[in-house]
Amino acid sequence: MTPELLPFLGRAAVLQMLAFEAYSRIVADVPDLAIKDAVAQSAGAALSRHEGLVAEIRRRGDDPIEVMQPFADVAARLSGVITGEDWRESLLGAFVAFGLLDDFFIRLAEGLPGDFGPRAAQLLSTTTGEDATVRVLRAAIEQDRTLPSLLAMWGRRLVGDTLLVARAALHVTGNVENDELRIEPVLTELIAAHTRRMDELGLTS
Image 1: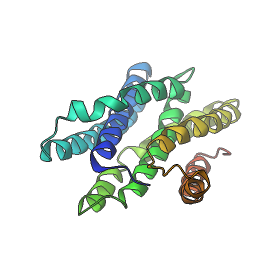
Image 2 (image 1 turned 180 degrees about the horizontal axis):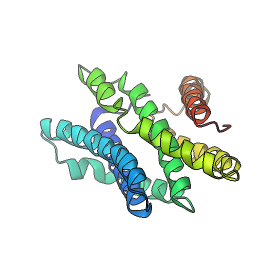
Image 3 (image 1 turned 90 degrees about the vertical axis):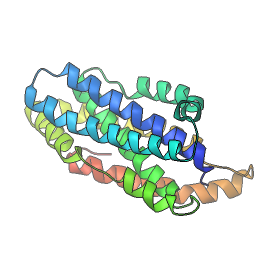
Image 4 (image 1 turned 180 degrees about the vertical axis):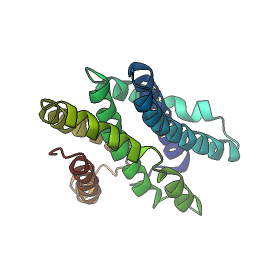
């Protein structure tokens, strides 16, 4: 199911850039300095992952922009999907979508050739900022009794759109039945990980 190495790198690098942009917008939107600092950690982690993937593209003698360009439209569409009505929805959107996609690309990395698979998995496994994001969302939920139901509904909406982005990265054979049998276990793992994240926030998935 894993695509060729350069498409993997290009798509993953674009998505990490998008994560950096999404978290950075939230930093700009919130008035509270402590929240800005917490969310900035997630932005910094995404930027670090992006730079690591770009460095790998350059190491192979390719132009990162050319490798990433085919996936720019997908990233732009996802950006519109995960942007909420306020910073709290947008933060959950980033937390849910990029958490799912990081899990997915770590899983895909197992099929990459040579020694890059373990390196990619290690790079994408960096969770710096995730704990701070969870604390911010928990605090927001505790302060607003109407928020849990709204965020739970928002989280459920995000999953389907994010999984479409994930599926688009898969190498399929054209045999629909066989492809679905291979894809289903991966998607099941992603949903389970998503459920754990929502549980950590005290939200139903």
